[in-house]
Length: 135
Image 1 (cartoon, one colour):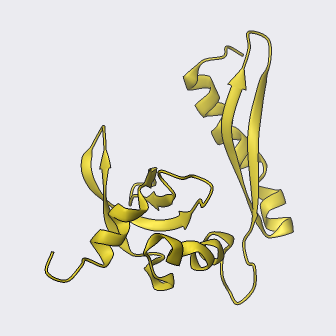
Image 2: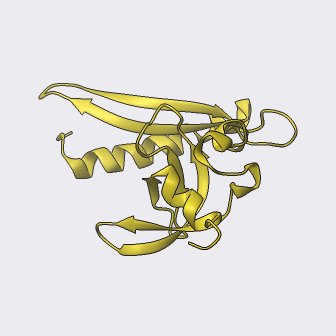
């Protein structure tokens, strides 16, 4: 196996398919993450999340509802559509799908209809969903 961007993308896809049975068995979502490598080896970060953390909420939704008010957002903003700026496609629609409180500058996670995942500044999402009166 050559260590290239293309082969790592293929590896992530194959990994995701191969852990499908474990996801069903344990009712979790397993996501392959960043890869660090040398000439002879690589390390793959793996994130495992519960699919249901109680009250019918996903882990991402529960985390969002817990932390969103710190960023000027409301609990019901999860799943709402906002515009996100991308370097490749310009300004596109995306749905709020999570929050990462430890990420100071870009804590809001969004996903596009095509499945692209992006992060954005909290003030940007808050201003789009809750514009100030008279602004």
